[in-house]
Length: 234
Ligand code: 6GU
Image (tube, rainbow, N blue to C red; front, side, top):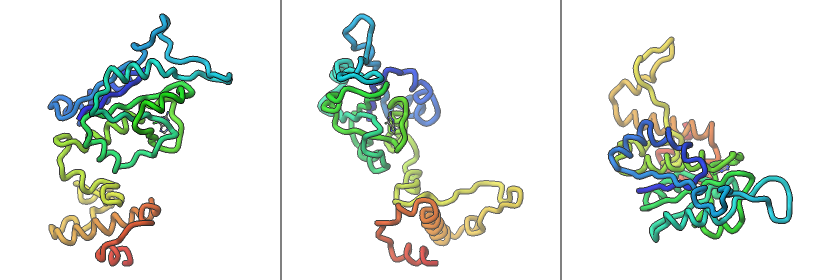
């Protein structure tokens, strides 16, 4: 799985590619990550990527040509092209799974006040990472790359995914490690019991409780199993 990010700020991604789990997976060649600076594709001598809006008004607008040419230089028939914008479809865990199945994902980061509308006709999808406005798409591209890469084989242990928040439509259950008593706060006894069935039940119940308290909208359309219904009603 390869991700290419088109950006005016490739250095934004330096710590992403050189740190922790992503750095290790890149070194093992489990995944590939590249950035392409679309300023290198400008045709005017001052390397401008933006211009004043047609019809007037404040701010600058990203030009279509540098992005179109940068895209042409990296796109293949196996590429899926996503434009990062606050107007896009909200990014969800299910989309991370879909993207992790692709050979090549291209993420285009906008910047400045906006971009030429014709850029939209070059892409397969527009995606947002939440209802707030960022100065550019870079943080979104990094968030999506991280969420997608961690689902790729060999990046993290397979079983680590299954209990993730959102994977089963619920928030993750509480986790503990030593010490058993930290300044009077105890690890729940069931987790020390070695009784696997009871531990599984406790975790499911705590997941349901946490989801109900913090994100009740996630439960709105949920089809509860019999066991979940019993635990939820308790
Ligand atoms: Cl992907 N880009 C920008 N500029 N702002 C955002 C966003 C993306 N997602 C939420 N806000």
